[in-house]
Length: 226
Image (cartoon, rainbow, N blue to C red; front, side, top):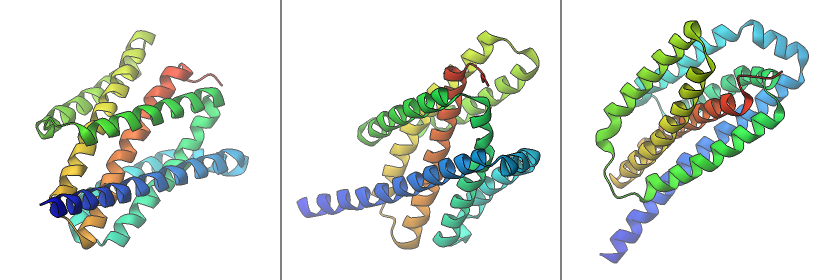
């Protein structure tokens, strides 16, 4: 019995380590490309000129990974994830032109601390959160609608409220996704399926972190001060 429990814990740790390793690799690639692009004026100008197509490609890669996951290999899934992280780095280079370095570092540090705390909570919490998936889905839809409405309505109070809700929402999603990934590992996935699960899980956590960072950046940067 003890041997079985130990083996199960080992499998879970291995799966979660792979997941966070992929996520960390994606974040490092995003940060590196964002900085390199920002540091090269000619490249930055070219990227800004095709920013909309890049955003559309980002959406295409995410939806492609979601729908094609059962039919692609782990190697292809990993390649798509890194392509997505690289394109995100290109589009994020514009943030360095809008926000001060202090705001960027503060937002990143706060996002990292919050993400870490929520990940630990999601890993150790005993309450089953699987029933909250629909709530988070509708919450994200509501947040998107509010952000679109804010384009025309505007206002500091509404922008502040959206940013705060966004941080709280993606912090909650981090808890939810961490527990979901732990349950996937407990279900006994192995081989290529385990690697694809780790990559897709890394994408989910990566998106949570990135969105949390963006909303925090709006709070720390006041909408941009350059």
